[in-house]
Length: 118
Image (cartoon, rainbow, N blue to C red):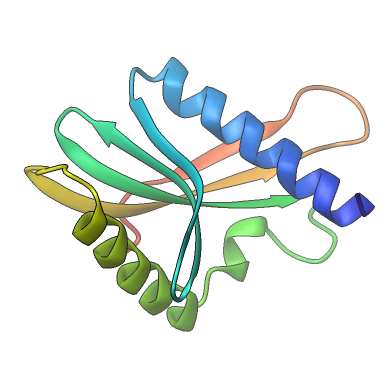
């Protein structure tokens, strides 16, 4: 596994633990649809939440959340609709969140949760 892939995978693991610790029910990870992949799909008190996880080992090239562009948000919307179409889940609402993870050289991961980016 490439170092960049390992950083991303670790960040997704951190984010999955974060949402489970928050009491969310994890429904899917790394779900692949026609337009790409959803990192995390979960239920938060009846709301279906798809989570885009962005991880960096530092902020020298900007904050991880800055990588979520309008184009990416449009793709996440399409993917979320695809996920709902093939699963038997009837949420009361749907939202897309971003979890930004920074993995410093020492110390714990820094997690920032941006709720409802659209």
